[in-house]
Amino acid sequence: MSRRTEFIPYKPKTILNKHKRADHWFWTRYTAYPYKGCQHGCQFCYCREQKFSPFDDPNDFAYTIHVKENAPQLLRKAIARAKTDLIFMGDYQPAEKKFRLSRQMLAVCLERNFPVFILERSPLILRDLDLLTEINTKAVAATAFSIISTPDSVHYERIRQMEHLAPPPEKRFKAMEQLALAGIQTGACMMPLLPELCDTDENLESIIKWTADHGGSFVLASGLTLSDQQRAYFFNVLAERFPDILPAYEKYYPAGKSYGAADGSWRRTALKIRELCEKHGIKDRMPRPIIPGDKRAKNKGIVEIFANKVYRMELERAPKNKIWVYRKAAWAIEDMEQDISLFYRMMGQKGLEKIPEIGENLAKEVEGLLTEVV
Image (cartoon, rainbow, N blue to C red; front, side, top):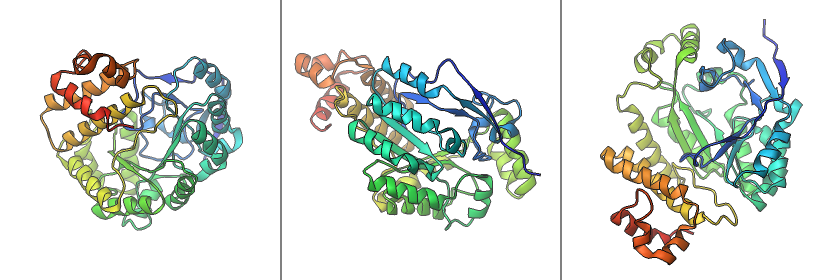
């Protein structure tokens, strides 16, 4: 017998999570979500892990939805005091049809001219295309769709079973196309790429080609993580439905480790994704959205260049100490309160050397980038 979904309204004290600086994947500085739990119930979802989940039983994740009924009001107060930067938000699971909290939160961002980023598995996001278009006109609206297979995939049916109630990827791609036609930056997130199922060259190229064909400008990818109760839950799923691949997962995800074995397979996958993205004319990194009127736009542009360089150096197996030079430099420039171009005009190259983590060689590099970054 199928289990019915239970909705539990409550009023949290806070909604906006503030991070020290923007992450280097989605470029978001804040996060704000209207629900805990997800009816889509993808069986590989990391949100069942203890540090993310409010549930002791991982089976409750897809059937017990905590509804933050005061989320829009909390968000309005929070962003009135926050520096304008990208918020990772939105949650278009079936509960949103009833409670409409994601739409109300978008309306708050529109009131405050606050930029938003939404990563989604549902075409329900198109219901709010009007708000997203307005936000994109006044600030920034960027989107992406979580997609790990296409109907062309050999393992499509298996993967669809693991995605539980999530709408099929064909509908996500159609939604991507409509967002792109509306001028909203969009792309695909191949997260997580399931070993033995999603990481074939054929599946990777199919997702990338479909993304390019539907107006996406980038693809991001990461591997599967499994930890504590989520690992046990997912291994049970494999044992019941796909016992043929369980031994491989036991090898990749030994007990006590969150990530797969360090066998070099992820690097091979990432390099293949980069090659295929170049072939189809899109990026394997998300372009950093430009917020209109941002006085630190130059800083953020240079940070994007350095962050992309860090990613490239990691794939090329550059020495770790050299990688950390650029990572720390990116953080230091991100943390600057001043416009770096104004700082340079006042103090010159020697002034750039006074920025933490920026020595003489990096100062010269930054100096050259100042004329390149919009």
